[in-house]
Amino acid sequence: MTQQPSNYRGRFAPSPTGPLHAGSLVAALASWLDARAHGGQWLVRMEDVDTPRTVPGAAARILQQLADCGLQSDEPVAWQSARCALYQEALDQLIAAGLAYPCACSRKEIEAAIALAGEQRARHTELVYPGTCRHGLVPGRDSGHTPCAWRLRTDTHMENEPIALVEYTHTAINLVAHHTIAWHDLRLGAQQQDVTAEVGDFVLKRADGCFTYQLAVVVDDSAQSITQVVRGVDLADNTARQILLQRALGLTTPQYLHTPLVLGANGEKLSKQNGALALDTASPAAALAALQQAAHVLGLPAATQATVANALAGWIPAWQAAYVDRYRATAARIDRAT
Ligand code: GLU
Image 1 (tube, helix red, strand yellow):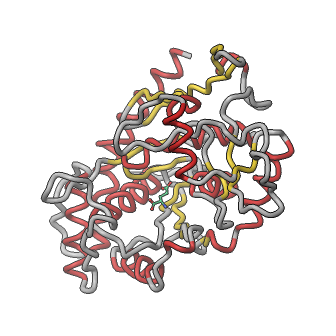
Image 2 (cartoon, helix red, strand yellow; image 1 turned 180 degrees about the vertical axis):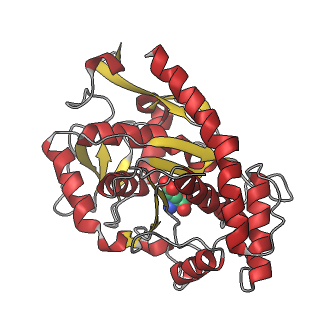
């Protein structure tokens, strides 16, 4: 396959909360193959912004596992923990635009406010913040003394957002702008989420001072000029929030592709949290076996060549045929329709 120079920039963005497992290698391999199939750049970004959850040694282990699998970042690895000034700048921009506000509510208080409003919450779903601090902290608290989180307002029109994209509903008290974000996932197809109703004003910076994944990922994808986000489908639900934040900050939206999940023996999503085993990549044979398993999840043929490098080289055209060509056809259909 001839590769043209391209503006494509993709990334793999692991959180160092443990070593790579079979599920995270699928996302790593898919994002690497997609970048290579487009003749683009592939970057690794270490998402260590949530310092209390960062496990010492995990980042180095992940980078070693990636290297064992022949997946090397085309640029020096970016570390989120070193980029907090950028996240603060973005937050300041949102505060200045009246789109971010301090919130001193505890989880208990949020639950109580939701119960008081008579709203039900499905099990396992996030709490939709009821907006208690939207118009100021409750009397007796001030942001100088009470530890505050910072939330994004999802109930007002945003300056950078085309007015046609926002729907409005009347509540007993006021008019609420609903940000219903529609986006096209290259594998999943048309997606939509009413962020205002389904997520609510989400946290950008926590009361402990940590910036959240949502803010950091949006700032970094833009700062690193990422054009294509290829990641696990377990993250798909975050996409609407990220697009909303991109609009609030006046940033461009990359294309998204969410890869299939690897399920554990119990049929549940494999994750570091449910004890997924660290991948063994210590020998070339083990690394090749791990890659074969990831390629299988992506529907790619088993590599018959004996080395990691040969297997990767063989999967690039297979990925091209299985994914890129299919997406080009879909993208052409979308272009014609709009
Ligand atoms: N750091 C996130 C995770 O490991 C992935 C972020 C992303 O790809 O957007 O779950």
